[in-house]
Image (cartoon, rainbow, N blue to C red; front, side, top):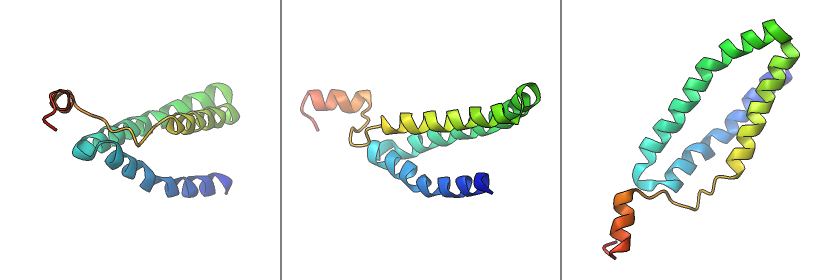
Length: 101
């Protein structure tokens, strides 16, 4: 029951992920969102395989502890993201240097 509630409440954070992509890189938000989504889907494909292996080798407690550690680590890394700092491409940087933008 608690696991289902945790999964449900975690979806409340999803709008902020997509908004951060738009905020950090307005010109390339689609590419950034695609990269973020690709990484999440790759992790979603690897997670069941790893969870089954960990549960078989060490038990379910260890498997769920590793999942919690990965989730917590992701939250800590997310706190380090500064969405107010825009991502610039090399071309944009060069144009700013010469005063064209």
